[in-house]
Length: 328
Image (cartoon, rainbow, N blue to C red; front, side, top):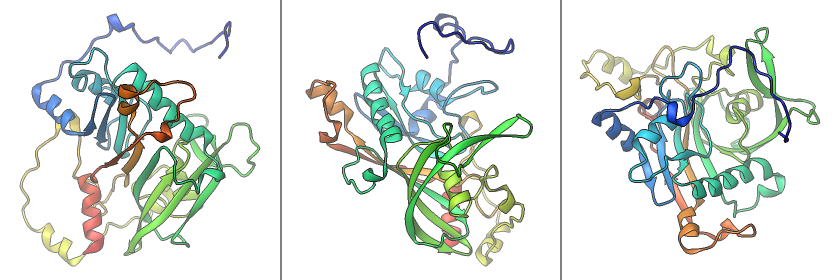
């Protein structure tokens, strides 16, 4: 945007209230402890959590509970400012989510994630000193033709259902001004019973990039992705095995209901309607706190010179269940 630009919005759009006018929720001790139990790492500059599936990262129309609000109320600790989002995960995805604890650290983190998204090119693929590395685990239906490879295609948004919704798709004409190039490395972890576990390393960070690359480029949609793999899921048959049939007759103890309606158990491949099997499992990023504590950040400062933080997030229970079923 530029100074003097005018924005026109429909009458149905309402402005958010000012900070002083917002009504902040008050959470009980159990809810606060649950949110804090999601923490994977914390230092003076950042907080990293293992985001549960089904929890929106950011608030919006129709969203009652979101991670940014929970972080403000439960993860501020003794800081005068709340943690701030620096990247996103889809609502139904799970795994590593990084937040900045101060305005300065958030600015640095934004530049790191932005550089990854907008500056990535084929020349970066072989560069082992990439300052940000992310690895997702996904369970897909079918098996890619090659055990590993590089996906590099432009993606664009198309409107469907008479304008009621939209979706991302591979764009044949890469010169389209609305398309964005998307690059993903992948490798097969293992295959079994018609399913394949993939490790996906996004070099760029486009919306729904991994889901579209799996479904449209590899031809192996992610289990539980009904948006981009709906045709394959029309013929879905729940996974069954002798061990599974035997255990189904055994009584299981009642599971404790988690706060905010979060469910980490149901949704494996043994069920009629599996949940999205996409999880940000590993991340390597620069130690921002080192830069803020001992060094002066300047425009020519190279964050690649910092030591790195290595993070690993356990799979949610239902994905772990699918893993165990396919290996049994």
